[in-house]
Image (cartoon, rainbow, N blue to C red; front, top):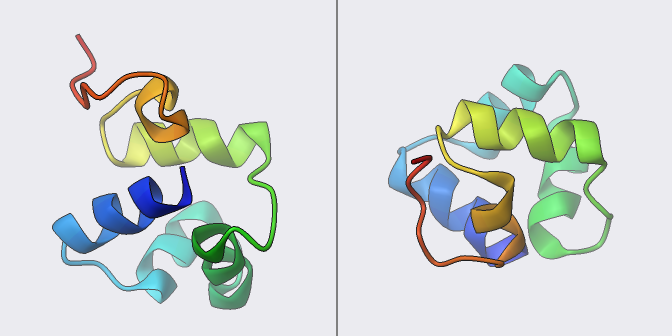
Length: 69
């Protein structure tokens, strides 16, 4: 899951700071999510899926299909 959120961010050519701003958290907190040092709260997971136009299942590794449909 942590690699997936990093890959999604990098594929969108965004910085951790830009994602953190969109999620209303600090860059350090977001960095901890990517590094797996902090569990991602459900609300943040949902926001990440919306932001990247994908599903929570994809982020969680339950599917390899990033498409919403």
